[in-house]
Length: 108
Image (cartoon, rainbow, N blue to C red; front, top):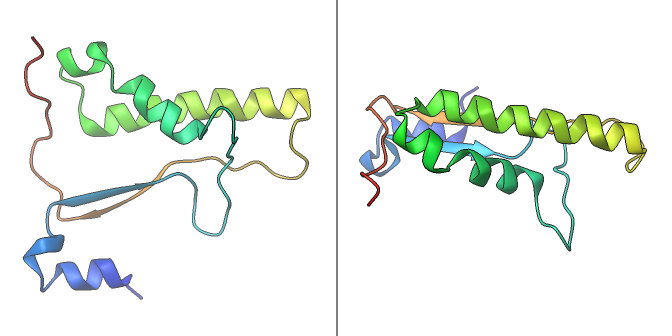
């Protein structure tokens, strides 16, 4: 069964060309820290730096780089024993017709 957003995208142009990133897979909680924030946001911000922007990385490459940072974080959390139970911090995305080239304007 399609999600409501995917279903709406077939009829409402407002939902076309949309890419939504989620901080964790469906059914899992995201890791959060009140002092340091979300590892997901940190990973996205780290990848949206001048290197990825000026080297014309594809959007999926940027998401892959962010996932690598989250993987390192997950491994660190497991080694330190900071969280009990399974740690699933993986980027999930939903695309509703997002098929145009994504780019950032030239940096000055």
